[in-house]
Image (tube, rainbow over all chains, first blue to last red; front, side):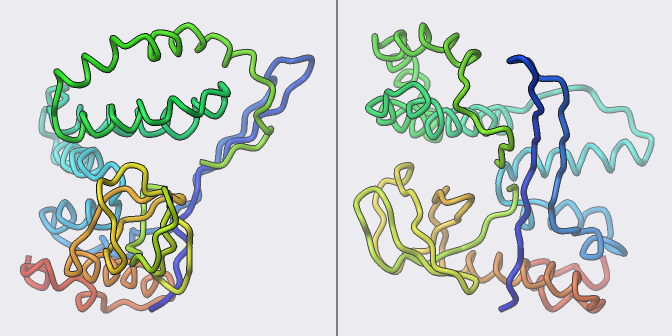
Length: 158
Length: 91
């Protein structure tokens, strides 16, 4: 089995006097074009979610829309429920990993785990109940603190 | 990022699991998964276990990743890496 570097997005911020004055953004992913070249459009759409397993609903939808655009077909902007749920889950997942630690509230991680599971299960009632809890409200009040957070390194890899 | 790898659980360590896959050993955060046992296959992204995989799906993804690696090495006959797509040759 060959080793494979799955890549990264590299964001480099330069700051002067507490303000960002330059941003460099680099996307380093393996080039999958040789795998797709020569395939039919339907094969490409089947392959994309297999290759890009993270956000695979969005990747699949993007591939379908890109092909439709290449054919000159008119595409109505539309966010289907599966993609919407995936976007919510992915955002909450990053929050789960990053925010509690950044805010010094590691104990909140369990709330985020519950939220992520409610979204994965499509359980809106449980999610609504969780979001109404005082702990989450406290977090909302703490969020503005993030904008002044100086603990981030200049180079962030995600 | 965007591309994860299948890893098999070797040992549970609280909210983490020691896993092996694609020639590496890694300690994955398993907070998001309900019950993880040694032998389970997980989809791993940046140190996190995102979901459980069946053994069959793990083989399929690993083969597809081998396909990317082979393409990057200049291999051009890649159909063997994607057996789950029956219409691959004539589609």
